[in-house]
Image (tube, rainbow, N blue to C red; front, side):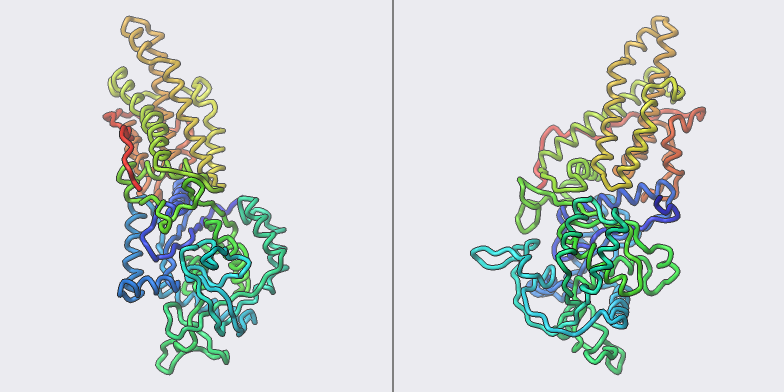
Length: 546
């Protein structure tokens, strides 16, 4: 069983080299849902996201704009934060690899690896991707124009020969294989685990952890060639020692965000991370390099790495360089924050690649939210207010309410899917519960029962009250169930039902969600229905958001 005393999850940190596309923020939205779920369940939760700011590509982009690298990344980080705010992202910390505590953390990790004999001097010659670092020739794509990085085909490669510090990844081959065997679910989905295990079994090569460029854009390397501390007499870094390689630097953000090395008590509480959520293109770094780096420093590996796929457009990876991306701000302008969150995680499977389009997003919004969920809430509140005079009816006991029959099992499945990172499957479960409730409305026809009650049929009146009570309760439960996905909709929905929404803007400080998700949790509490208000206006015209 997972440790319920706390939950620490992270996303990959994004390159701050351009404004983000929706595909960039996809994993951040999904991770925010998982964080909110754990907070609402009452588990102390720490959620980390942020930006990677030290790549060579960033310094090149800054130079093209006539800006210092720090000025450039400050501007880009502002764009990331603005888009994340619009998508309702609520990290406990937005970390930047330029943050002073991260600089200290990265340098401490280098020192520990050096003391452990896992860092040594050597010479590297090969292709260097400014976005990703040195790449083996076997990993590159070759076409008529030359060699390209498979993950950044539009970024020109550089042929470099440098004296570098190397990390002895090869020394951790056996330990990595044992770790995979002893913790079979630490990398998921399973087919991704098998891919990584296959790569390990091919034999691991040591990798570079430094760049030779003196005074370059990056964290100063803390050790000179003779093993001494790379500080000048005035205490400033010696630029001749070079910089820490961007990938070694970037991975360390996860322990910086947990308190390493400045706050040992905080670090002891939050580490190891319960979950890293990352994309498939950076799986090797997180599931092979990263655990070895941690073990070298005497630190535990994370408990789980979840590897998601890419957003595709007609089979091609979505990206700004290809011009096939969606602007998250434009999507929120049309669908709203919660609509954007919902369709993104309903349309895009969290465990594999998914082909999407703006049209598919609009169709999903109209079908699931405007037509099904929004319509269910609107007509439930409208009928209950009209037929019962505004008084909120109690649901019938679970044994007498057909809508209650499958509720406990559905919540258990939903919980398993959220906590298991299968967010698209959780939303499919939610959509089926909405469909059940709408089928009940159509089958029971409360308007017919209301007419019969007005004509003097007391049994019809009693049945009407029971059915409307069940529907109001179902809407309450559905609003809370989907609140991690649609956090601004939930309080509006609960308000229409005459219930308080006791959670903070980030999901903290409320009652235990699993108790609130019990059928009839508020039976006997008097309440008045609010004014019915459409939650998801239908989009009759499909505007362009790309």
